[in-house]
Image (cartoon, rainbow, N blue to C red):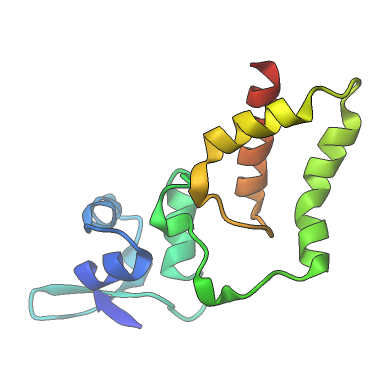
Length: 142
């Protein structure tokens, strides 16, 4: 889909095009530029042979559960049991590696306060699992 920067920002869930403009200014989205129509800059959201614009921007920005860029689409459906098990495997290994079992109810409450209401359901990406593991260790240390 070919969109101007304002439309692309809305498509990605942003309220403004500031992030897109910064990435364009820094030359990080050159491959996503479509031929110009007049003065208007156009972006291809799904160029052939490249990751989608959403995936590219996710790779260039910080993981923030509150960011619209990291929210799952409502139409994505429920994950399969296999996908859930695969997503949970690193966390299960981490839990099994702990010597003594801490009070998981307290840790769960702290972790939920860190994550907020916008953390997506599994399956998670590698970055999301790493973030979750870091937050788990922070919650356990508190």
